[in-house]
Image (tube, rainbow, N blue to C red; front, side, top):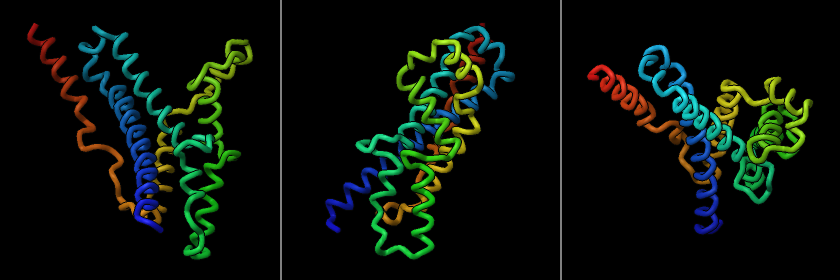
Length: 201
């Protein structure tokens, strides 16, 4: 395989790893801001609208990045295409079985309930708001928990990282890549600054 081909595959691998890192970070911020509310209630309640929409933006961004990773579009950089480009010739029988299981998990017609739920929400609400969603039946779908939960998004993120870790060596990538930046808790500086300012008033 040429160096140019390896470099191209590595770049695609890095795109997927970065998408999952961004999803993980946005979900981390959403969760931590939610958990911080009791300790910073006085400060946050003075701009409740802003903080509610900040959390919402982090959740939606996390969902978007996960949806891109598990995209069905064959022209996109997504997990199934990444797995389909792994040459099976040098794989052991056990590795071939694992590869097929991973491909089945994220293929276009995946039967995994988490992947199906993510794609349904992406196709009907996140990427564009489907016209039928404003009908009574559509509103019922939205109200009945069809949006992936925080726990479900984290499970999909972890599964994506697991798949990339498993096949990193095939794409000449280093296993153990960053899943959250070391600055992941810098939101505390903002919250503490607000609280200090409030106490000085």
